[in-house]
Image (tube, rainbow, N blue to C red):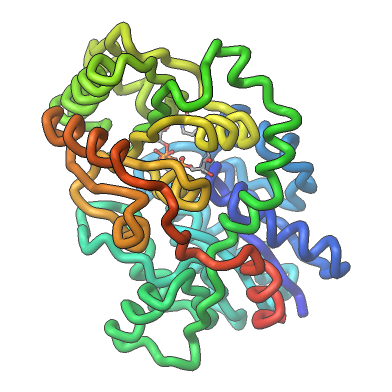
Length: 356
Ligand code: UD1
Ligand code: UDP
């Protein structure tokens, strides 16, 4: 087989790392295509370095743009490579514009498409990610659903059983591979003078939250109230998208919140593992906190990871400050002995067994 793996953003690098590691162990050769959707060192090269990943074979250098322009440039670039290299299997992960471009390019060529993290649905079509997931699942040949629930959602959309495989999520593999390394190597707690169990970790970058000044201000005010109520500091590694919006809207973060640059995966994992509570709108962070037995509050109106809510690891509270405070208190009073629903850490092995 001529096998290609497409990635472009921070979460894809984290969640495809286990796939690259198994390829390496099994001497499976592949072309790694980086679209360049993320390009700032702190969202990109830092992850390749910290996770010891090979340099991409192709770098499309697309960068930021409107959805249509960004996606179309990536689509053209991926199509060229798949054709000239005679690639017959393309693997994508998640729900970004990089995934959409990889999916559309592949589906029109003589190549099969594998989609990791298939079947996730927020049922909110205003999210660009929801459109990307739906399109990718409907053109995909191998749909790797993390849970039975996500497989059911695919079946409900009329997708044929023969395309659906339940494998767990590669994020479990990634957390298992890096949790101990993070304990050993990360100095993040010391650097930021944080005591395990006595701080709140937050992230927010979703377009529907941070591009709207009222929603963004409301989230910041909710976090501030939680910090005061619990008397814990908040550490917030800020995504560049959100930093840009804060500047644009002339918003400042409250004194209780310490803004820091985005962290590398080991430092961030260490914080997720030791925080008393995590408040986020990230998809990956909802999963990781569930795996690490850390309570999570999701500041969104819906989630495509409802399994985290069913097991009690997560509550979805929207962006009203009062609801954020109530969600935080509810989560802190719960026991954290839930069972994580995303598999046993062999997703990457299962996916490669099925695909090749
Ligand atoms: C993208 C994904 C989102 C994912 C997130 C992971 C889409 C539609 N969105 O959102 O699903 O959760 O990545 O972090 O694919 N920027 C930089 N440096 C970079 C990249 C972006 O400064 O390396 C800034 C630019 O101002 C850019 C903005 O962030 O305009 C948004 O970047 P973009 O890639 O469009 O979306 P993300 O918000 O990163
Ligand atoms: N992450 C990180 N450093 C940070 C923030 C997040 O390493 O400062 C990791 C996090 O552990 C997870 C991934 O980035 O694996 C999630 O990415 P993001 O929240 O940007 O995207 P989403 O999962 O929402 O698509």
